[in-house]
Image (tube, rainbow, N blue to C red; front, side, top):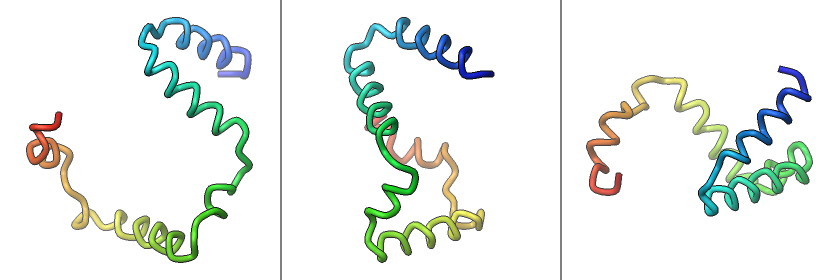
Length: 80
């Protein structure tokens, strides 16, 4: 998909959404991403937060550390 197609599809998607709350959330997300610089979020984290994220990335590489989606859905069914 090229830039023109992406923009056209993006506009079509936005025009098809009737939920105002979803539109506001979508707008805020895109706005924050459009004006942020690459690496800005990472740079705003403390060294401890950065290390925690790196550790998390390493931990998810081991399947024994993961919980199946269906198990989580069952455990939290009352909130779904």
